[in-house]
Length: 350
Ligand code: RP5
Image (tube, rainbow, N blue to C red; front, side, top):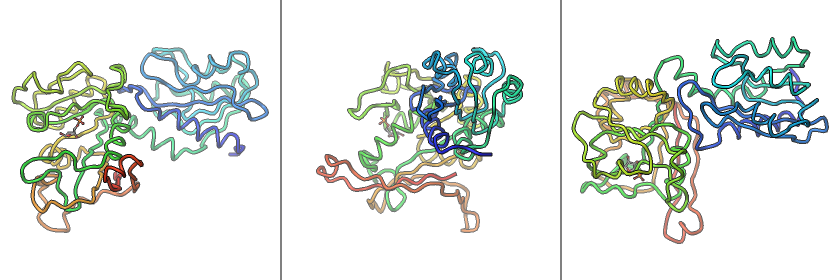
């Protein structure tokens, strides 16, 4: 394997493109980015997959490049597909455009789309693979888990005080996390296709569960995840979760397995779980939390709602011990700082 510095930089960019927030991804689609490089290493065009039924990353980049794609190197986060699904095969588009070399990060786990490399090589295109495969794998992890387990990937997000509380004794919880942490949450919400809470959270907190911009305005309806509320009790239609900013479904079950199965049938791939302590505990006990994102605020309450309910742990040896994958300090913006906000810590665990 040998890659030029320009190809390495292009792959970093392709991974960024693939992770563009706000792209609706459902069960059989993937986040993919592509950069086309000319012989002199300049970027000819860029593309990324914008969701089901839209052109794949390679096709988007080729359309932007036009004739300049001839002789170019295509740097792609995933092996180009070799099948006709909702759109045509990327292999044929790359061959027809006269691309000289293709560099991709990892092979496609979906057997239906496989065979891209062989087709490209048969057409005389030079192919190299494995560049930044680990980063591409992390990006693809959501899709791969959904395919393997036939259920959506679950990210559980919560905010907590230093003493593990998510609300004060009187039930007030706005806000435990800082403004910077809440902005970060909206960035992460936008990467998922479903927001999930329990009916109790809707009754008690009346959350919106939308993706909102820095001015707290909802982004367009086409970029909103589905809002799902699970629980057997009836819901008050006047709750904010039923406003017109995004679609909302009521899953009449308290069983995490059944809720995820229903969401998978609706083509959902990535659930952002923002439920309260009881729902979070039910998912953890069922082994249905794949990733945890928590914002730790420099605050002590001493009493109040705990961030997570009973996990059935009675002794330290039985503790759940997720593995930390990232620790980031979220500093307040100058305006937040002037308002007295302090840094929060975001911990990501798997
Ligand atoms: C909690 O407060 C929800 O679980 C959510 O995390 C938050 C509010 O969400 P938004 O109303 O800001 O969308 O009830």
